[in-house]
Length: 298
Ligand SMILES: [Zn+2]
Image (cartoon, rainbow, N blue to C red; front, side, top):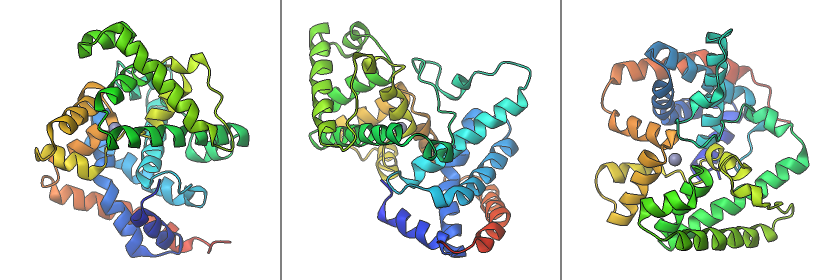
């Protein structure tokens, strides 16, 4: 879901407001650069990709769906720019898109769809996907509100990382039966949560496998990704023990590249001030002409 602040910014940008556009760049440049730098050896390459990402956002803004957070949308564009980059760079050599994911992602591939290609996709498929995303988001919110962190870890291990019951049980010091029980109850819960949706999600046994749509959607939409404020408090050591253990699991063990990028960015906020300012200026300068030339909505 786009936050109120994001929704306001996007509206202003669509109306051609340059200050709002500058603020979007200032707000997201750091985490996007950190993400790109994790993938690319050269800082200059990473900066170019970030610049293209902002331009891409501006170009695809009419198709922006406010049910997605602006951060999720920007990371989707960035991932596409990166996979385009690797395709161009390594043309002739077979380049697996899996290289964009941590090695142990259990085969959950990054989507090659651009947000706009996704939006143009079949409506029924899109509606089903929406139902699944809603369900998973609600589920994660409930787990966190009720501090069911261990259950959430089990779910990420099984459904997102594609680990086996046995492996999860060994990692967490539980019995296999306990893990299987959690898996069963969670799937029942998900079925309930999608029952109210207009386009019901078609649950199949296959959805429990790591290569399933659940794992794909989970990563693409950052279903269990942490708020930047939570990551900041984690770095300050201001989270309680259970929360901190969960954040550590999600970022470091599950290897969420998006949260790792945010952590990198938060850690380096005071470094490279000049280079960062220069990149923000570049992103703005290269895109602002496009902003003011945009025809008004309608
Ligand atoms: Zn994350």
